Length: 426
Image 1 (tube, rainbow, N blue to C red):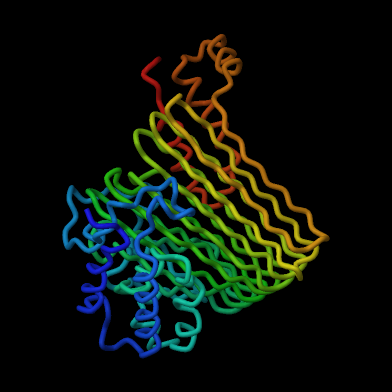
Image 2: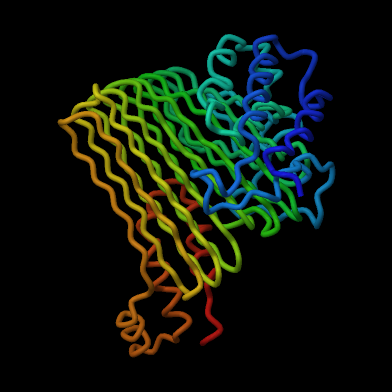
């Protein structure tokens, strides 16, 4: 078998055929696609030899077949209950379903529509926030994405209801691209759901730009087929006094890799990067996070919790950078994992890189099993062993779930978690 790094010719041939590029695209976008492809050819699909991927085997993605195949196997995937709503009138062509009411002050457009109505905004932000310099999979998305969702909130707009984007079966949803721009003093909630059937590779990129005093609450719910690969990148850029919250839910896919980051460009910024992953069988889930404190008087919070059963594997690598000018930084990072079997495992590595002297930064990681005394106590009160196991598992994850502000989303995954690791015992 040829080396994975040498198998980028398939991608190059596909790029030269230009199936994802439209003659109507502006020159600046074509140039960004070209630079992304050049960078991918230099980097190649990551292998276990790459430090950032040493626990995550992506060799099945080397030839691109799972990404570019024109058909998916299996029946159409059922959507989670919270996403089973009527599509809005502002659909985005061949892209995702857009659920819910599009409220005053919000726009949800396809790339072509946004290029006509707000070309300067798209040029300023699309493929600039999520750079491809050290992210080969992001480069693949930038080179090939066939369409994009451009979601904007006008200055001062407060959107009470979340906008839901549902990416299901079909080749058009294999390379999702989302750009969210929150204007000054605006507030927006976005829920991205990924569900599919059969064997495929979905490679998603979301970019967020939060203007001064804007608030963005973003949720990514990944319930892909257990035969699928899911790779995703969420990158935010924040201006003064803005807030970005990210919650990553990862229950599906055979292999899932999530890269999540934000850069705090102005003083008074705040961010929360949280997540919950629950995997079993031979699933693997990998979260890499990065928070860049570039300015003073900013705060960041991270809580990632994992529940793993059978032979499942988890990876967490969290990085916090505090630049020399970022005095008065307050950063807290925590990764906690619950192993339900002797064969499951977690590799966790929280990191701090601090170049300022007046800061408060803490990080920590834990890996443990269920408390046998607590389980015995519940059983002594007449609760069966299987039910006791489920209740203790839910209790472990509860504080993470409480950070989900969108009620239907939280309730769906609360119920799913309560039954996901059900024991055969009564």
